[in-house]
Image (cartoon, rainbow, N blue to C red; front, side, top):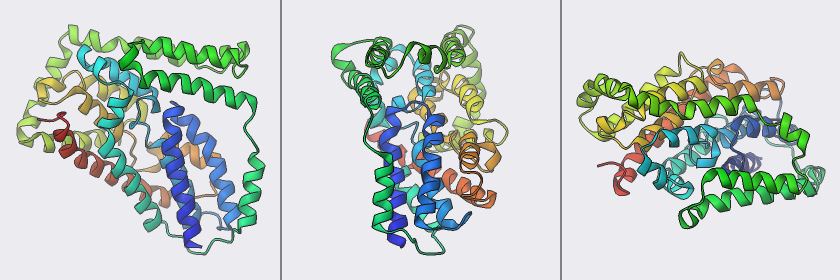
Length: 350
């Protein structure tokens, strides 16, 4: 029924929202949920590449990918933006402050995505799923294994430490080491997994990039970039308009750059230059992170291609992908615009 699709879409969106702060790698989240969305569509009896299957697959993609910027631990790139902030802002934007500052955008995103999925991709046929089919799917998942419980405990150590960081003043690195220690001691992560499962090449590159902001600042590159953008600031006339224009600039850059390079380059260019533009550095970094997760064409987004490949191309067509990409882009811009009065209220915008 239509109610069944509504419940499934809402479950995928809310489930993705809740799991995002626990797994800071969006690619892993999307690759894990995409096959489950496919099985759910089959259990509900929707034909391949229909609007019903597209709604379920895009709900999984959006729910487990597009909320990455809302939580500090939702994406590794968020920590890159943190390192580009001035020292006072780094101490200020802990896990809870980041989430509160992104609150307005989070509300618009989750409501807007639900409206898009259930409005644009309303199923042509009714669901054939019965309560017994759904109960059987739940039994297949089975109870949590001991390793999964240990993993949950390790994540709890990390998130609990991040939430209490303003009280105990513990460095984030020590919290991460504590979580790894819990996982290894409990057997969820063995020695071989520690060596092979972690992308050490990415971590080394990420460590090098963390020091790039200081290099650019010492060479006055941020001052040069800010001076180049001053005409845009004057043309905007107000901070609210400038914030939305920055989102449009990021989306335009995504037409020629993949998501990760666009996020890296634009963060390096814009976050250090934010004070000279009259904006909070965190606001600029958040806009880059949020707007970089959009796509106007299916080939421009790695999570879209991952979802398509993980479901064997049976869930949606590229036409569905273009419609969803346009809708996601519009909702992201609405989230940025809706955040302007909220950021003024909490003091992030003058």
